[in-house]
Image (cartoon, rainbow, N blue to C red):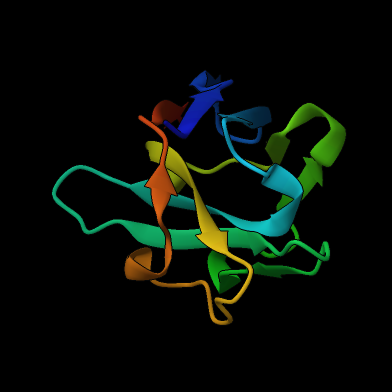
Length: 124
């Protein structure tokens, strides 16, 4: 059974940084696209960033220039480096994987496997 495990969340002051990790098991990781989503209380889960199997990346506008997505296929791990964090970045962050056949990768239904999420809280 495929498993995705996120880590690296926590409490940070505004302007600070965190690096989230997403480690996959029982998955041919290098052949999959990886996405990061987040969900704040009372809101829908929203797209944050994705990195394709070929390392192409894409970000939602609100995180461009602050967040960087990367992957290390040898470690079956994807990362989300988050800098200049703002209180509005507070949410549970989820990683997910999608078939390399998927193209847009900004909607939750495009992803097959999900992690359990990691909480990120940004204080003033």
